[in-house]
Image (cartoon, rainbow, N blue to C red; front, side, top):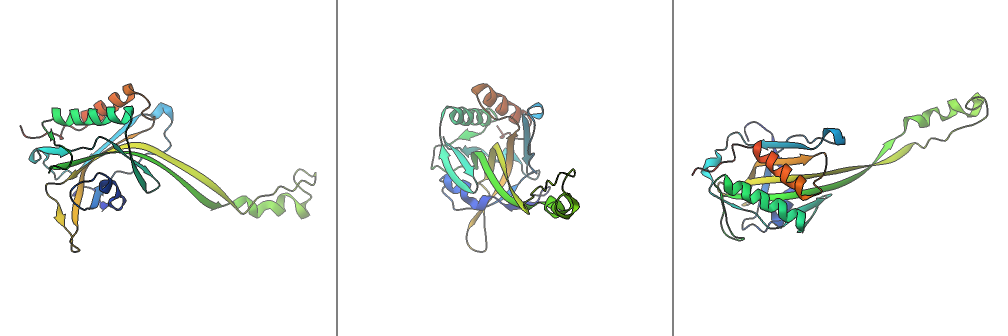
Length: 222
């Protein structure tokens, strides 16, 4: 990608789950994600693409009926009313732009994945207040002069939750081969839905409408 740094995408696990006909080591173009948005700041739709790519060269796309659930580097597939609506909306939007959806297992120019990210991270950090426990208590008479000596552990744990939706498109037409013989698929388009979650059909429709409105370059040559 000529305007963004490339990096490996989740060790290829997402696209292995999509059962594409090629083995892949993926490189991705990703913007830094926005975290901890308040309800007043959401929803936020972030789109990013490879500026060197002419999307008019592509004709067909492959899109599974299920979505990928990513949870702390673990991957599974899921299909329910919400995910079906999202898949249908994305497929219709691409079809309207001139792309043709192909059946599962058939060759395609583009591979499309819809991903539900639900990560939770637990960490351990040092507690700077532990160094002042003797100042507030002990030999200094205690906090407020009442002999109260608060206890501060030297460390504490914390948990961060990161949840959002993501749409990715990879280039299947121009896949290259690495020195190890693996095919490499570049992520040429990425969209994320941050902030408020997609909790009903109306929010799904609003999200897909906004994402594709921000992506006029996703257009096949008719």
